[in-house]
Image (cartoon, rainbow, N blue to C red; front, side, top):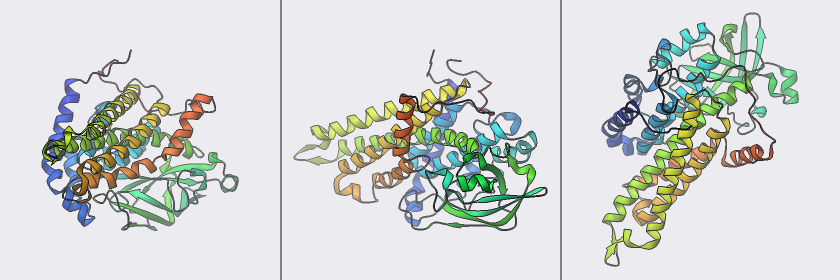
Length: 405
């Protein structure tokens, strides 16, 4: 039986993250956004709160909380700004949880522990200049030479590209399969910034998530020790899809927080602004937009909570996490558009936060599977064209006490 009641630990986490973000980030976020500047001081504060290892077991340096906690933190962070949630998505969701599920004990001790403690920052490298939704189109290669792989290629639209210490990189290790676009020729590698031939840069012309660091990195014959192969050769596509399951979950929860932010800002404005002698909240069409935000918020929250519950009990949730991501991000775009509309001309000014919400929401409708890709995925489940087969490694179920477990 599904039980989505939150525990006292969950409520305390929500309150802690909400108060920290409101106190330490919210007063400065508009200025950071205008300056297109990422504030690196956020990272050690998040580490002190245990957020950078929130659902990593304590034996690997993490806070040992459950996967619902990861979703709750994601929602609270994006309520203030999307750039905060992105940190959890790439550092925890895409990278650290992949190491937890697929890494050797040595890899976990060497890379996962310092990541969970916030001593090292991590991200994920799949997207390339000519490869987004079609992962088979990537061009990065990894050539085995003795006890090392030599990686060459470029990754694009990488969150924390200029900040991260560790990079989980997907590359072709079988060139024949690369020519055939057979995904069983892809492998995953743990790459360190310090490796010779590695370089990164910042993308400066994006129009959303301006307070976050987004960039690219290049590998010019970067030598990676063979022991940094994550999983086995040929498992890179499976690992990438596994990573996206976790990332999509955090994106869904974060987008839910953005809907709530749009709702709250719109309610405040609708109670203050007057037209035709009454508060605009008295107008039926404004009420309709507010009601739709509330419906979207409640629906999106239930979808990601269900996916988190499934993670807690160790049940495969690719379908559910994908549905939550699709629905929540599309709803956040709708909510942000309506929030700007409710604010009228003031919504077009950065003196109010809704314009920032509108710019920020669009990215999530594109990355980690566009809305079109997710629509096709859900249809394929219904038609029986797609099933979730067990992989060699799965996310370990939460070992503590969970709601409904």
